[in-house]
Amino acid sequence: LAKTTQPISMDSYEGQEVNITCSHNNIATNDYITWYQQFPSQGPRFIIQGYKTKVTNEVASLFIPADRKSSTLSLPRVSLSDTAVYYCLALLYNQGGKLIFGQGTELSVKP
Amino acid sequence: SQTIHQWPATLVQPVGSPLSLECTVEGTSNPNLYWYRQAAGRGLQLLFYSVGIGQISSEVPQNLSASRPQDRQFILSSKKLLLSDSGFYLCAWSVDSNTGELFFGEGSRLTVL
Image (cartoon, rainbow over all chains, first blue to last red; front, side, top):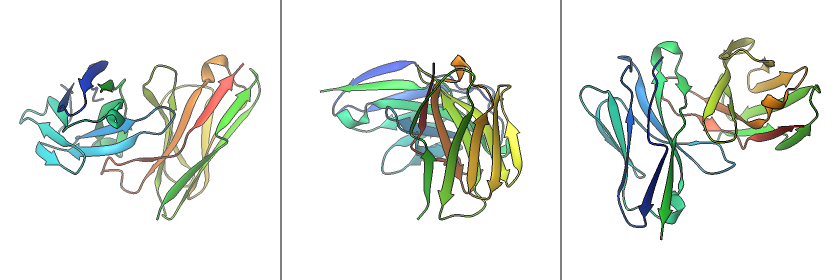
């Protein structure tokens, strides 16, 4: 079962780029790396997903090196509203697409 | 467009009482459905997932159960609540289990006293 490890918390300031790294040493060949954002008392919201190399959308970028043992979520020019918990998780393709959430990284953006 | 609804939004129940949380999805058919629990201090724990009517997979041993009586309805139940059942319960759905994109409901906050 793929397990992900990420920092418990991070601090940043408005306008900075934030990179959150996640390690997943035993990720399986068919698993995808997926990131979610969660605000208090709300359900998580899908941000981005990737398999390898780089994926970019209107919200973030995801970098996955060739060995796929880690990944980095990059948030460009964060604002106060980006303060949230960010979860890195592996999509377990061979287990019906099961998603197992870890503890997440609590990002605090300060003015 | 697709929507997901959970109810009740908040619930305070005594220890030993029964529980029923409901979740319905609209605007799609044959979704994959999930129940997660989030205790205080983060971390979502997958409780149950279902790929079709009557098909339920349980992830952790517990005194909770789930049922899917209809294609777009997912119910979380307990016959006797424990203090440790308190938490934020989230229902989610996906149209394709291999995309990794789950859509979550508003959540149901359960307090067991």
